[in-house]
Image 1: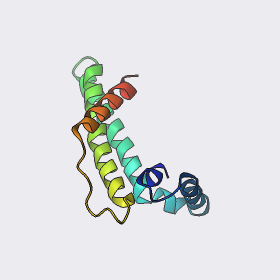
Image 2: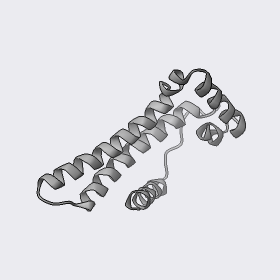
Image 3: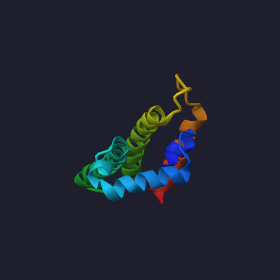
Image 4: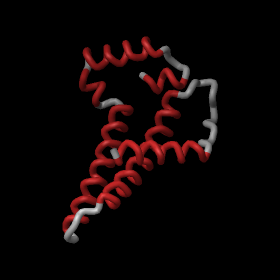
Amino acid sequence: AITKHAAGTHGLLASLNEELAVLCRRPYAFVASVPCRWLFGLFFCTYGAANLADTFSRARGGFSSTAVLGASTAANMSVAMAKDAAFAKMYRPSSMKVARPAPPSMFACFFVRDLVCMAA
């Protein structure tokens, strides 16, 4: 709903009502939808990378929070950018034929956000 609103294709309340209606009437369709699968994939990859890094660091006789943070940040950033690119294609206005390239400052914002959220 928020992505549709940010793209300018739907109003926020209308989009929220539409998504909640789908969730209530057809929960399987909501969970099986492409946006929901992207979110589940993002969480799976992020936590999978963190758990793998934790398991490997403990198997080597210790615990490295740096390894866990690095692995989860790398997984989260790469999958989140792929998800955001897919959402931009799904929800961009039909009048926009070609997507604009992402500015380098966007990647810095992703990195800082991920470090702050996952380090907390």
